[in-house]
Length: 190
Image (cartoon, rainbow, N blue to C red; front, side, top):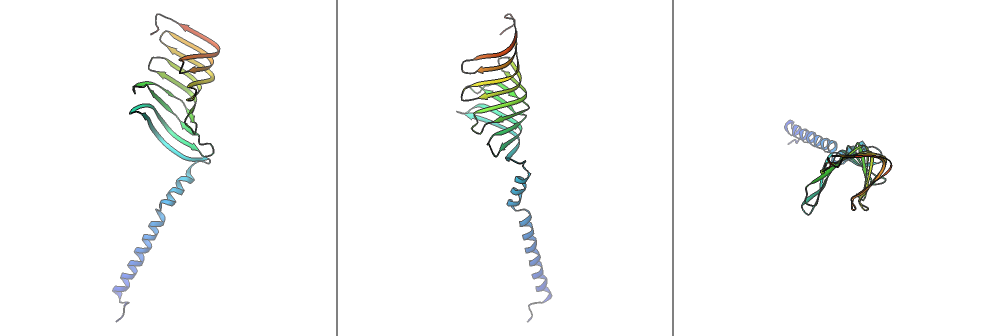
């Protein structure tokens, strides 16, 4: 009795073809090759890159801040997060909106304590005032916002301009450093 009958030969050939196809599929779609392709597509010096980020930080069941950004990249050498078109929304202790700030780009330190915003920085507070500048740095440890750039602050009945600024958040104090110009109309202020 011969094992190489045409029917057995076709069955063995079909098994070999199926095995070859399975090996080809496994090699082509292996997670390792997909991961390698993603890592190789990242710009040099970037170890993580995410797009269309919308993150809300919650404490005690209430939102404290929300970050929306078109792209976030973590730099491998420093751990700094680069942000494209960042928008930060802040909330008070009750979780109610307190204000927002957006810019063209930003950076967040690896310990999440220092935020640097650059390009068309626009801050809006729910109290009605706005602040515009080209750069703004925030240090969480000192609760201080600073810039060396020109600043424009507008509210009902008030307009302040200057070069360089420090905002001491705990003390609720604003200091403009140079070239200060202002306009106050107490009748229109809230």
